[in-house]
Image (cartoon, rainbow, N blue to C red; front, side, top):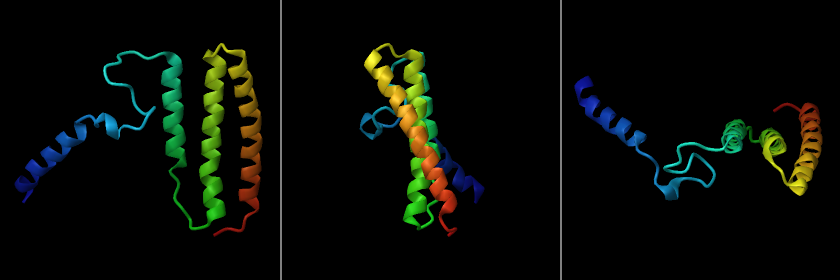
Length: 123
């Protein structure tokens, strides 16, 4: 029985290793084809984006309020992290001011969402 599974497993593994067609790639996810080295800010943005999306992949409870807050907290944390990246690498004064405002507001909203989660009755 095992020898019959080996060809199927080899095929599945081979297909999994093939690069996704460009149309299947979401804009901003993964390095562009053929680009050997990226700017440090690009690498950090990609890493922050990946962390945010992993954290937003929550186990849904069926409670719309809890699920909204549980997904939005990491979404806002991702925005804060991206704003901090632009403060490290960005030069435009208007963009930097916007990043600072985003950090202030998103951190305030994160605290508010966590407080609401604490007071909501458990499911």
